[in-house]
Each structure stands twice: as structure tokens, then as C-alpha cells.
Amino acid sequence: MNAEKVSVIIPVYNEGKTIGNLVSKIKSCYPDFDVIAIDDGSIDNTADAAQAAGAKVYSHPYNIGNGAAIKSGIRVADGDILVFMDGDGQHDPEDIANLLEYMPEFDMVVGTRSMGDQASLGRAAGNKAYSWFASYVAKFPIQDLTSGFRAVKSNIAKSFVYLLPNTYSYPATITLGVLRSGMSVKYVPIKMRKRIAGKSNIKLIQDGVRFFIIITRICTLYSPMRVFLPVSFTMFFLGVANYFYTYITRSRFTNMSVFMFVAAIIVFMMSLISEQICQMRFERRGAVRPIKKVESQSEDMSGP
Image 1 (cartoon, rainbow, N blue to C red):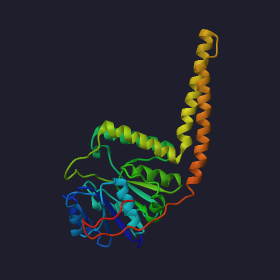
Image 2: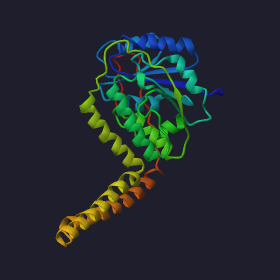
Image 3: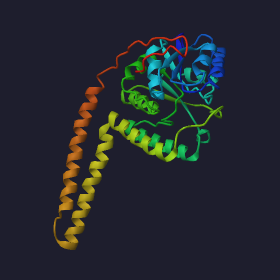
């Protein structure tokens, strides 16, 4: 990596037990880096602990979401390269150098977790399935779709900020956005540490279903034909199969076959329209608006 300025963005929510040590470790390893902690409406001493350790602290007046904190960090950061990492102590600051080793040759470098580093077997399997689905849409082997530890060029992150959701699905959104725009992505293995305090609030079934819907929406957002066409073809072949079955058994062309053929045509036409809208949307770039810096937990800024 050359002499680009690096900003490390850490979204935090009630991480008072871990954020101070994390910021101190980053400052110790990389004294020239700009460390920014986005306090997403914490009710503990998170903001004070981060500021005492040397981070620049920006606060939301209430809890908006992990993705909203990331967007706020992107807006206020002035580094040429932005590094995103969690504030719960699971990401090792020493791995930042492994990501930056491939910058600026690549547009984005993502830390890849192993199966053993996942919180549970169910979440590991789910992440693998989501990564496969996203790889199909992006036509690129995505190794870890939901990793929150990544480095990306600042101008690229700012251009996608308007598309990022306020939830935990921001890694999937920016990954597909970068790949869909024809930019380069590199995956680097990292080692996850055990969570220092607290536990994950993600529920396997409830959040799994919600996240599947989010991933489907994101994939439809970036490459709608890759999602719509299989549905259209499935409806068409089901119509053909139903026609042959009813013709052999009852010598007639049933309404069900008509419905499936019409549905296949409608879904196909919707895919064409969606693809055109997607192409036009990608000509747009997100606007960057300033965010007021606060010096303590009591001075908050307006959420995005």
C-alpha cells in the first residue's frame, strides 16, 4: 500500500466493555490511522470509553441500526481507504495490515471467516447458502457475504452510501454493488476471536428468514434477471409438464396450464423492465452530506 490515508470505522452499540481496548490496540498498531467510533445510541459508557482511548466519536441520538452507523462513518471519514470492523472484540486489529496489503490494487478487500469461526453451525450453513446465492447473481465466487471486516476505497464507499440499508445487511449490499459495477474484490482469510462480552442478538430462525428476504431483495436490486428468469422458466416448464399430463390423462388443455404459461410470460416481462430500471439506477451516485462531530456522549448528531 502507498501513502493513502486510512480511516477505521467502528459501529458500536453498548460495547463499553470492549471498545476502549480495541481502539487502544488499533492506535498502538497503526498510530497514523484515523479511528472513528459511531455510537449508535448506546445507553452505557461506550462513547466515553472510545473517546478516552483516542477515537473520534460520533453519536446517533437513538439506536438506528448497524448499517446506519456504517453510513454515518462513511460520511464523516476523510481517509482515502476506509476499514470497517466490529466493536465487540472479535476482529483482530493486526489483521488490518493483511487487508491493506492488497490496497489500492483491489477496490475492496474482505476478511473471510472459516466455518469454525462462525457463531454456530446453523449460521455457518446459512452464510454459506447466502454466499452461494450472491455468487450466482454476481457471477463471482463470494467467499463470505456477511463479513463486517473489510477495507474499501473511500470514493467507492461514498458512491454506494445511498443504497446501504440501516440493518446488518450492509456487507451484502456493498459487496454486490461493487461486483455489479465491475470493480475488483479480494478475499483474505482472517482469524476471529471469541466475543469478549455479551452475546449475539441474532436469532437463527426469525432473523434467518428475514435475512433471506433481505438477500433476495438485494440480489433483485443488482441483477433482477438472474432472479426472475429461473422463476419464469420454472413456471413455463411446469406448464408444459402439466399440459402433457392432462392431455394424456384427460385429452384436454387445462386452465392450470394456461395460468402457468401466462405467469411465465408476465414474470419474464417483469425481469426485462426491472433490468432496465437497474441499469438506469446505476448511473446515479449517492450524495455525501456532512455530519456534526460530537465530543461526548451527550452531544449527539442527527441520524441519517
